[in-house]
Amino acid sequence: KWNKTAEDEEEEEEEMKEEEEEEHADDASKGKNFCKLVWVGRLAKANFPEFKFEVARSEGNARDLLRRRNVEHYWDLVKNFDENAA
Image (cartoon, rainbow, N blue to C red; front, side, top):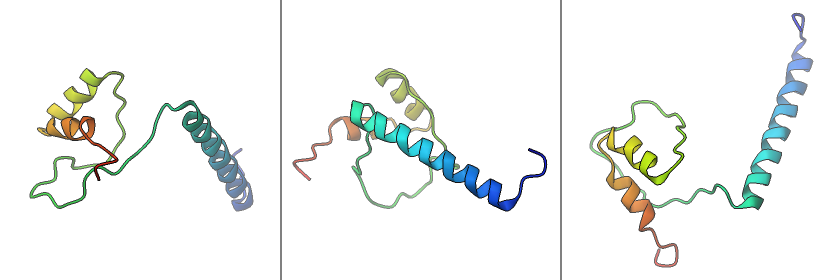
């Protein structure tokens, strides 16, 4: 629509949010993706100048993505994380 009203845009945004929430709920129920906090602290240097998502289709691909930023050890940290030990 070329002549959307603010109300139309709000309604569209709400629909998109609902669809996104449904997709995330589906993913969570299938056990595909999850997020855990594994480290908190300060770094001397920012290794990621901008925040963006990158898809890693395999462990090797994930390790390569991190290696390019000189933070391959982040992968080891995540792989060795024991939620019960925290």
